[in-house]
Length: 385
Ligand code: DWN
View 1: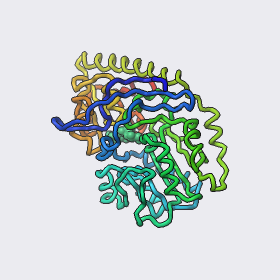
View 2: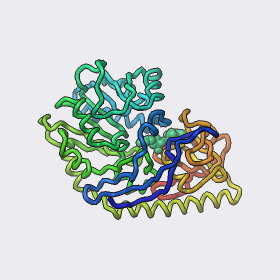
View 3: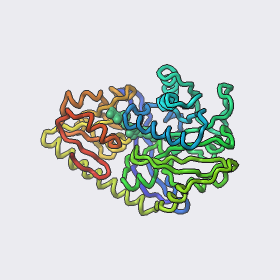
View 4: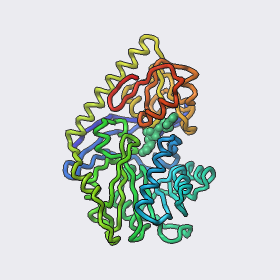
């Protein structure tokens, strides 16, 4: 494993705490690259209980994500006639509710965060089992036949034991079950240079070559690959059972043939990180040095990485706005920067807003049409609009 990126000691990206509350602390954030299978992964693993037993991130309420759910449902329905759907890492159940409204039934999920399972039940009427998914998971009787569709959105790259996870998928599926795994795609991350998507929750940075190597010893194979333009670029990997009798779609070989991920790509992103941080510091310190006010928009996990790398404090970033109640009136992890309601952007009218939820740029800038200041957009390169 070759070290390719080193962020130094970083706080946990979703460890939003009130003043005086005990924080989870810091851990080394270093990315290692395997030149054989092209998988990149973190050098250490933060215990999942620390990260996910209570989780601050709620599936986005944005129109961007709602539109994505519609597209994802259509793509799954085009692939299988089965409608019983089990979601691993179902978060607050918002996605399952959406799928239920689109015709999937029964739908049920699993998530390790107690606070999210409570919301899934009370707000969306979704049965969510509160535990980590693994090969040891024994399904209670609530589930009849094994599901037609098993969905895992932005879970797989958060898991340390991939082989165990895949064995768990084998336990919960029939030979004709469709397994759908949605993950950020390392190729897109390297192309956009979105280094702020490296944080302790993202243990792996997936390539299809690495996935093929992993599945070699399993009962599954890659069946179809679909790319979506959310979160900076993600792929949906549809897996089929080797006994399903269904041949892989041409998309699998097409994606693998054009996949280029090397040590150089990762070291280029490390360089891009350093130049972007310097540029952001120049912009923000320059603005605040002239008495201008700067805020950030979107207390994303990406925001935590970016603001800590830039070593900004509330002297540079007066506040970060967000819509997630579990983040409000707490500080961005590792900083003294307060998270406030998103109405603050229009009330305070700062001179600049750093768009730390840049993956929703179009939707946010359209929504915030009464903001009179300028946007600092950090990706794919730092620019002001
Ligand atoms: O894998 C993960 C991805 C899918 O989601 C998790 N490990 C953590 C999380 O990453 P993130 O926090 O960077 O995700 P988002 O969806 O880019 O976060 C956007 C943040 O911005 C949220 O806290 C919500 C907020 N937001 C807002 O305040 N106003 C978002 C929109 C669209 C808005 O209009």
